[in-house]
Image (cartoon, rainbow, N blue to C red; front, top):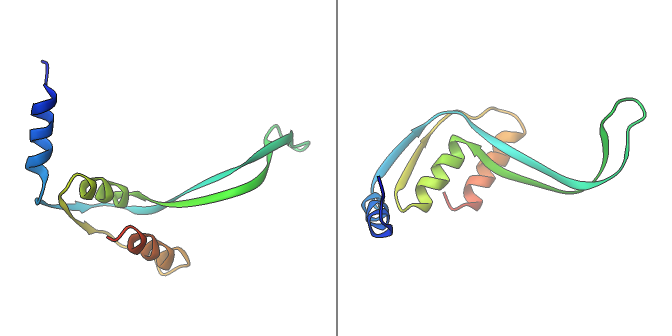
Length: 98
């Protein structure tokens, strides 16, 4: 079945303004970037000289961001812990203007 680009645009337009509840686990996805110069002598793993760390919303929070990007209003329902990552998670939400 072939779907035209006009039909796809129409589907996205129908999504605008909807309220979408997302229930699930939220998390922080962390990406570490660096340069590998050697392999560890203790185990066959690369030794990375860390150059950059990027934290992003993951799990259901990422789904909520995608829903928002499509024009709908996401309602995110989850639980965060009382640990160091809890405030960091809230900061990432605020940064995304969620």
